[in-house]
Amino acid sequence: MTDVQHVERLARQIESVRSEIGKIIIGQRDVVDLLLVSLFAQGHCLLVGVPGLAKTLLIRTLAQTLDLKFSRIQFTPDLMPADITGTEVIEDDRSTGQKLFRFVKGPIFSNIVLADEINRTPPKTQAALLEAMQEHRVTAGGTTYTLSEPFFVLATQNPIEQEGTYPLPEAQLDRFMFNLRLDYPDFAEEVNVVRTTTVGAAPELSHIMNSEEIVAAQELVRRVPVADNVIEYAVKLVRSTRPGSDAADIVKKFISYGAGPRASQYLILGAKSRAALAGRYTPSIEDVNAVATSVLRHRIVTNFTAEAEGVTTDVVVKTLLG
Image (cartoon, rainbow, N blue to C red; front, side, top):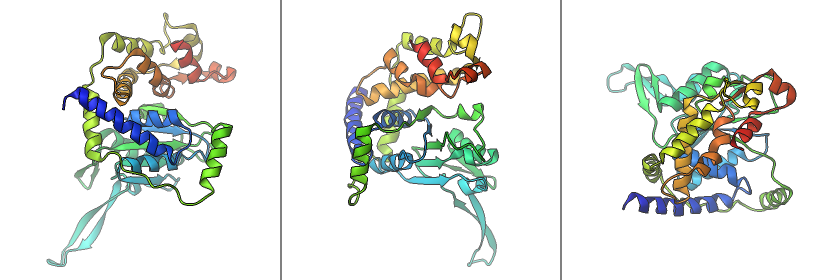
């Protein structure tokens, strides 16, 4: 099959994935789409939303539909790095009578890892997870263990509960491709949620893809060609977030630091993935705009003036796109 045929086949599979997820998850279509874009672009996601918006259920449903191994780590103040990556235990070798170290793998050794309330654990433990995200491997006792592909981390943060939390520094936030905001469902969706979740068992889900197909699709996304004008547009958009003499007034007034080059890379990767999942063979500027807010909102640092006037990074990005 040619790459064009592979793209067409991928678009059909993704439509089936969406319909399977829709059996369990009501609404949240934009969030589901961006999660899939991130997965096939080999990025990681940070989900921000108040409790009870089905963040965990959404990730579990995604893993089930894609036939991937799923693990959930509840982050707490006493969680240690070894609780994530794994630890070495001493065992007796019955044949020789000697004591040996054996590595017991932690929950990070899954395809989809949900790091629940990542801001509830100290920086040392956060760093262990973020290192695995970046390197796709874990080192313990001098031995390096490679994580199985695809490897996709989704971290959640509760925006309203700030007591006893350790906010992620900007440099660590930059490791996440997307920052996704989950909003409350509208009235009709909430009625539907209550109706469907207070009756019998949940519907059975079909496995649409497997890990080998997903890895092949991730490689396909990397091969999607991009026109020079789209790349130049993405770079100009990122550069427009940086304060300077030629910056827009809103940036000069409200921004301390703009987005770095990694934002440009993720804009193009996100645009490629979004185009391929829709069955298109090359991304457009519209694809860049569609992922721009999720890519940029956690990479722009606002100043005290913005905080005083209630100007968020979303407002800045929307103005720049306009």
